[in-house]
Length: 155
Image (cartoon, rainbow, N blue to C red; front, side, top):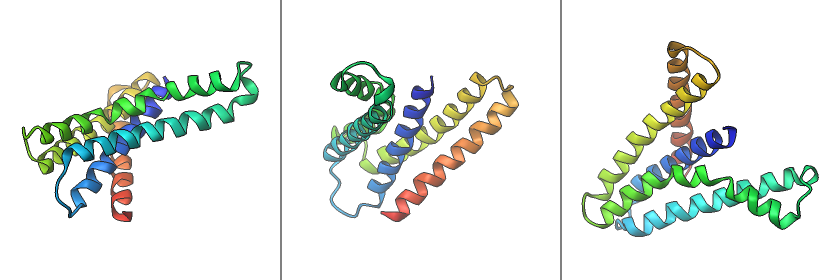
């Protein structure tokens, strides 16, 4: 459950940050390229996280290094899944169903709601009541938006 939450939250923040960065891009819109960029960045992040976990747990894992590393990298799938809404919205813009700016706005709205949902569900799993879980979800959503904003301003 912990890896699912970690990957989901990290991927949601990553997808939001990348979408926000695209909104600041002054070049010619290329949503197909941007979708590929978001997906490859998520795959690279998942591989880096899995690799780091494999190294950190190497002494505790009796399997071979290659097997434990591959297994650890594959367990980072929630991070990649969490950016798929951004990829799908950008591919919709590539297909001319909507503009890239609209796709980015939708992604940021959905990911904001998703950050609230991640916080809410984690609090409920931890045994908190609905009111407390909603407060946790709201704070988690605000923290995620702060991180997205700080990353966007730094780029």
